[in-house]
Amino acid sequence: MTLIQPFIEFGFMRRALVACIALAVSATPLGVFLSLRRMSLIGDALSHAVLPGAAIGYLISGLSLVAMGIGGLIAGLAVALLSGAVSRYTPLKEDASFAGFYLGSLALGVTLVSLRGSSVDLLHVLFGSLLAVNNAALLLVGGIAAFTLIMLAIIYRPLVIDAFDSDFLRAQGKWSAPLVHGLFLMLVVLNLVAGFQVLGTLMSVGLMMLPAASARFWSRHLAAMLVIAIFMAMISALAGLMLSWHFSLPAGPAVVLSAAMLFFFSILAGPCGGILRRH
Image (cartoon, rainbow, N blue to C red; front, side):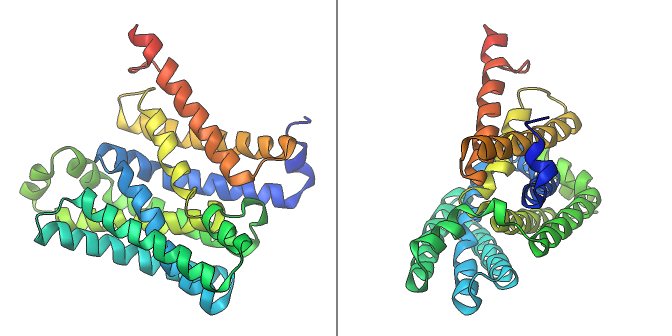
């Protein structure tokens, strides 16, 4: 009872937990598909790509949820589209294209925030302020989570086919592979914007990718992997917030650190390729 006492007594702890659970339900399945499509590091690149737009929103309106969210969404989608265009029309591969754009975006975003803000503001943008999540942020994260789940239900079948055999998807003719890829990247950017509001640009991808990577060691079936990844993300959120409260740790990094600990445990003990299982 002592462990969950903070969630019973304090509203800001409950809001932080609800925000993380919403992210777990919507962002983590996207992480599973990023892993299947061998695009794990592209999620990290896009998480940095939202920073310039969020910084411009910050320069215009201060720490405004709406302005920074809209700016981050526009910047993330722009980088995704530009990177895709560069990889399509030049010899540069998509991963190298994303790397170039995200490094430039990260430097530009930090520079823009530093022009007007203090080091505290910069840390808030980069690492988030999970315990300061308000009702407006909860509505935004919840709305993005609901939209993501609806869109995933619509494109689930073509997304799975495209992940394993894009030629078969093209042969069917019902869905265009570039359209499915574009919708998928849009959902990734949307969830990184939601995660940015809660965990900051540097931490938001952690809750998306670490549980997804961990689930790979517990099942070889996609549906089971999705459920396990969501469950692990929820456990990471709860454990991270409890660690933050009882040991005075920063909340966002504590959540991602909990997810990383589950990842290392999965590598060691997971029944599907874990080190102990194999040896």
